[in-house]
Image 1 (tube, rainbow over the protein chains, first blue to last red):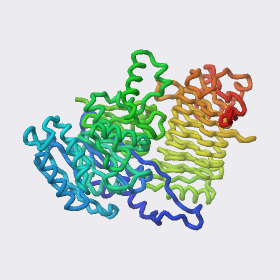
Image 2: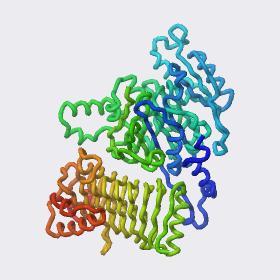
Image 3: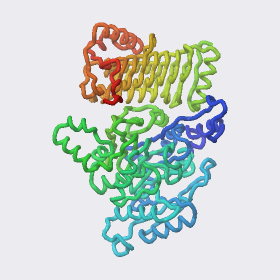
Image 4: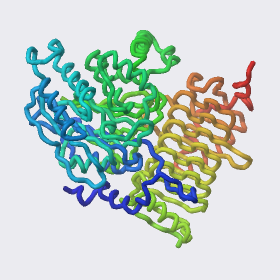
Amino acid sequence: MESETHGPAHRLRARRQNHEVSTVMKAPEKYYDFQKDISGCGVFGVIHKKRGLIPGDMPINAMATMHDRGNGLGGGFAAYGIYPDFADYYAFHIMGDNREALDSAETVLKEFMVIHQSQAIPTRKTSSVKNPPLVWRYFVTPKVERDRPKNMELSETDYTVDVVMYINNNVPGAFVFSSGKNMGAFKGVGFPEDIAEFFRLDEYEAYIWTGHNRFPTNSPGWWGGAHPFTLLDWSIVHNGEISSYGINRRYLCQHDYLCTLLTDTEVVAYELDLLIRRHGLSKEMTSKVFAPPFWDEIERMEEPEREAYTALRATYGPAMLNGPFAILVADSKSLWGLNDRVKLRPLVVAEKDDMVFMSSEESAIREVSPELDRVYMPKAGEPVIVEVEE
Amino acid sequence: MPKVTLDADGVYYRELNELVREAVRNGADEIEIFNILGQRYIAGGLAQEVKFLLHGIPGQDMGAFMRGPYVRVRGNAQDGVGNTMDSGAIVIEGMAGDVLGYGMRGGKVYVLGDVGYRVGIHMKAYKERLPVVVIGGKAGDFLGEYMAGGIVVLLGMNTSKPEAPITGRSLGTGMHGGVIYIRGSVPDYQLGPGLHAKPLSEADAEQLRGIVTDYAAELDQDVEEILAEPFVKVEPFSHRPYGNMYVAV
């Protein structure tokens, strides 16, 4: 692959080696010589509106350009259109601390689902990725009606969500980190370009990619806690902090979504599923639940808008996301960017032919597409939703 | 060694800034850098009157803490331009991101296009130090928030979002010094609590013309076209508008 010798991911790896002075966070005697990288997370996404396939090198190189937005404690990608031969099956990506944990997860999976194909997720030995868990993928369909051990009345998708929740809550040391069709999440502890090398993402092509570079603030940097967070086809990467995690988590709990991954962003993945798939809200309305207009703005609206926004805030108060965020959401049909309503995190959108890019920094977009038709920064709380053309 | 040319392609930001500093130490008075892609802190902390010409997209905190350099960007800049800068000039021939001119204490930043959120917040002035930010396009929320001094000029002309209002909400919230000039008008509800947009005095108009003339010369714009529209100004409603905020009554 070209990325073996060229591209920012490779250049960066070479560069960084000159700079890895010390990883111990101890201030030297002359504190003013202390070289500290000040960071926030970094996000990048790209969608090809005609489902043209984009090689993994593009998101990898874009994320590598924003290397210093993270600190090596989390990186990950979501890719759509990568399993066309298994497009009718749910692709479960499961990580296990050890063989025993993975076997336990597989036993549960066998009980609830029909496994059509299973295999280790292809990985490379990567020196910068330390002590990875075992990663395995299963292409499955839900058992139907009387074959099910329980929940016979549930729809296929509700049943599948229930299986994800069940494994993540009941199997020690194993987590389902991806469960959609013809898509997959790949994530772990490391810089995104290292995680990409580990998961051999340069060998995949997708019509939607998202990527994340993590700088954990108030939760542990571990494999399950890296972004993206996913459920069914939903995936989300996030720069910021969900200060409303507590109330969101309790609200989700009432609707049978249980948080297990110790990172605030997890609530967004489950709220997407609850609000859009189960409650039938549009993506625009969901954006206004996540980042509602201020009450004084609602006051200035005309009817029936005013009544609609009042109802939305009153009904979905516990689903509102408080705190700073720039999020990129994807499902099999769209890429969707959204900022918190006072825009405490950066987000740039750019267009080039059939591709739309969303990124924390314009430089990451220019790295992979030097010429752009349009570049802009969306307004706080105003979603940018790009759908594939059917 | 009057002029130095650097290629930033694939150069890590620390190495690039080391090369810049080495050139400055060796007496360069002009530094042109090509292929910049996100490298941070370019021209940051420099106290020499060196001239920079930057091609590409400079990264976060360009010109932070600088005291003296003249920086021209042939393209867009990212977030944190001119963070706490002391003196010198930054001219951006494109757009810029959030928190431009944060805590700025002197010098000038001219942007041809739009800027992001929280531009010019915490700007301050002291005696002859008078920071000036001119935005050719539109601004996001919180422009000039907590401003303590200096001048922000918002033109709303070269914009990528023609349908958007010239500025977002909460303009000048908590400001207790300085002035914001806005071309055209701004509804009161976009302003911070207690603030109003007022017409310019003759002295204001004279100050504005001086700034706009310099801006237009730097960015090849037409002074008369800019000044053809009336401006309004927003300034604090008293010397200590929040003096009683935390006083028990």
